[in-house]
Amino acid sequence: MNNKVYIFDSTLRDGSQAQGISFSVKDKLQITKKLDELGVSYIEAGNPGSNPKDAEFFEKVKEIDLKNSKLCAFGSTRKAHLKVEEDSNLKALLHSGVDVICIFGKAWDFHVTEIIKTTLEENLAMIKESIEYLKKWNKEVIFDAEHFFDGYKNNPEYALKVLSVAKAAGADWLVLCDTNGGTLPSSIKPIVDLLVNKGFNNLGIHCHNDAGTAVANSLIAVEAGVRQVQGTFTGLGERCGNANLSTIIGNLMLKMNFDAIPNENLEKLVANYRYICEVSNIIPSDREAYVGSCAFAHKGGMHIDAVQKNPISFEHVNPVKVGNARTMLMSEVAGRSTIMSIINKVDSSITKDCECTARIMKRLKELEHMGYQFEGAEGSFELLVIKELGLFKPSFELVEYRVMIDQPIRTDCSSTVTMKIKVNGVMEVTAADGFGPVNALDKALRKALSVFYPSTSSMYLSDYKVRVIGGDKATSAKVRVLIESTDGVITWTTVGVSYDIIEASFKALVDSVEYKLIYDEKMRIKNKNNILCHI
Image (cartoon, rainbow, N blue to C red; front, side, top):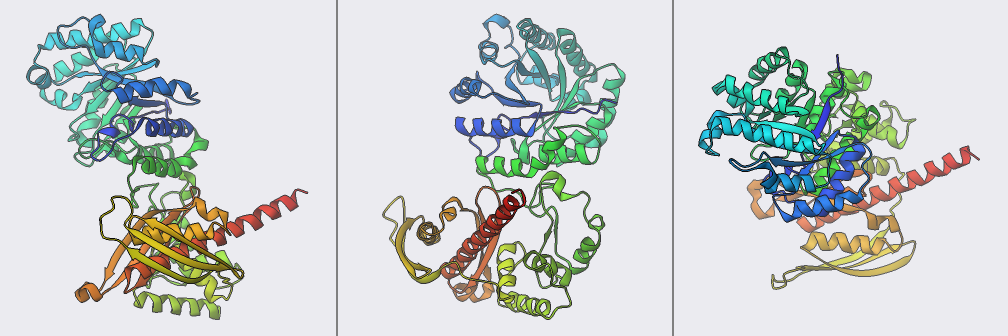
């Protein structure tokens, strides 16, 4: 059996059609580099004949030396009753400078007669002549049979004829598109089985997620003989999105014994997922299979105890294989095994029967009663453990801060913070403007600390959540603030609780900075010891 599955990434083209997504040329170039590093087979980057932005991208991408991926331009067959040599879209595809071109053509007779308003024979001629024209220029041609499954259900003879014409014209790949996203796996498999039995090879699959089955449809198509899978990272796409490649790659390689990307790159899956989310300006889904922050998160005490004894009890794969990590969520329902995983990160000699472990558990439950929630805020919990063990040394002393909120006259910044901090007896006074008080606090704190700790200038907030505790108390209720921070290498989350949203935010900010500085010191000591070991 051929165990190679070619991953065709359409994040930059199909993904850009998602609501709220608008890639700049720079964004597209950055994502192209990341996809190449991951090792996907094809990167479909856009339609050079449709808009100036894509045309500019195809000019600038020539400066990038791709190591693993083939760049692909996307377009359609020639227009009805027009010579291929005169079709502006086909000209733009040829002038894009890429060696791989993906064109779509109609496989559903309804679309031919009612949407593009031509005859069934003319549609076949459009497909045949367009592919032959591109092949004449020595291009690798991928033919997307648009609406193939709907077409097959409505008129199987014509849908099969579309594929036969494309194959005879020299198409390198025949891609079966579930363009409406409404086909179920039980319908996909028998159709692909039939095509394979009829001698169609080099088949691909392109699924949308309107019925929530895009991943399942893609995987069952591979089982039936398809060897190219099209989709997008994060599942971005029009309407409900496209097949999610981060899930598909994980399943193909860890469950189905297929080669989808270089095996050594699989551990980059999470980092690439988060990077693409960041550039796309979308929040990563916590519950995304394989790559989500909750994918290997355990909360219930009995579950955690089982995972501590043997991870396969509640984990279907080792999270390290995709670059993820096991997380033991801190909460009032967590058992001692959970807390031990954090305590032992600080001091590996402590056991769960030690007095300090009971003390930490008691303090955890007291704080959660007060409104704290350490589930998803392991940074703050690790600091709590360090403090309860008497190992905490503050990195700075806050002398005072003042927050001034302006009336919304200015269009840029609405808040100003002045701050005084002290580090080893040295006072630093600073001020910062921000888009609201929390942004101003964050900027002022890191601005002041960067004088003493330069690494704080590289960290930034990647997510900010506020939850009202006891909503029946209206504006007198407590609030809980969760802040996710990153320095581009690691990500951590901290929590603060107060009746004052600014104070709650500042508590979480302080924890975030302290966590970063403690981590930096650990890395400094580790690197120093590694150097000494090699001397």
